[in-house]
Length: 120
Image (cartoon, rainbow, N blue to C red; front, side, top):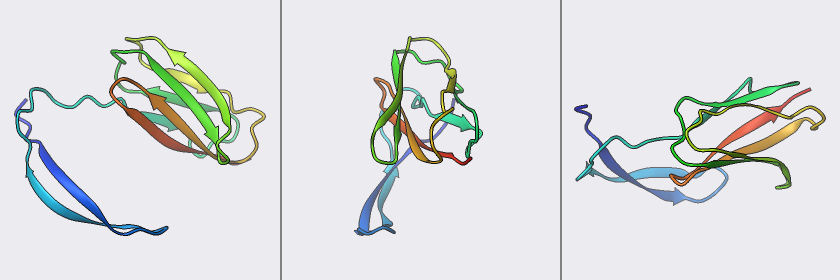
């Protein structure tokens, strides 16, 4: 579709709680046959109080796996998603305490994560 893709490489200049990244090099990407497919997802509302909807804007060509972890790394929820479905799923946050959670969508393309805040 006439899009130009560029490959950008970054390096960490200072590793701390506030890392600084600098651009090392930028060059045109070569041999791009088609646009990169992203299976990014959204969480609404975020912050959430009593309910939260997770959804993708594209169908998933391969099966996927959803996991939600609390701030200490404890698995709170998981679900398998069949291929060729667009995700539109309510997360069962009722009864979960206020705090920060991490929602992870794993596919054959990659792993995508979002932070979910529950505030009651």
